[in-house]
Length: 176
Image 1 (spheres, rainbow, N blue to C red):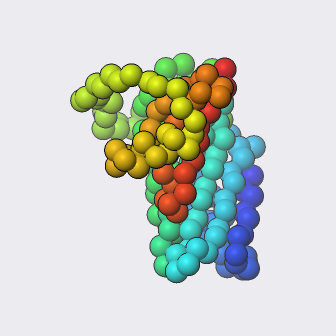
Image 2 (spheres, rainbow, N blue to C red):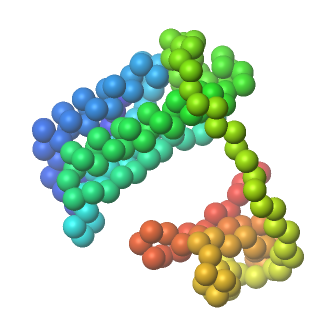
């Protein structure tokens, strides 16, 4: 695995780099040797945050953890990535074509995993009105939700606005 480590608002020490490589090195058994792993270490107020992103053919494997200690955050993010990978393996339909980033040894491992079916427990239908993203954010705030689906009046496409952890807003604009 090729691990790229970036620091934001911190000085990357050799100890931190070594710990990241040691912990994420445990994930090598799941991936092919040239899999790319991007790690961002940052300090935000009193929290020390670790973000790990691993691009795969079918999407991203991503986790982030923030604690008051980088070493604890590294441990937690490694566990989260490993849980995601194991859960993802049970969902693969065509192992050879949809999972070229994962190692053959990992895919052929017959370790029993809990069968967690995805269950949809509620279905909602609602009318979508054309509006701009700012108005959608206001509607989301009025409803007390963390996200809001709307028809963008400018682009005439379905978009999603969402509230980020830092209190700002994000906009998702799908491309076809």
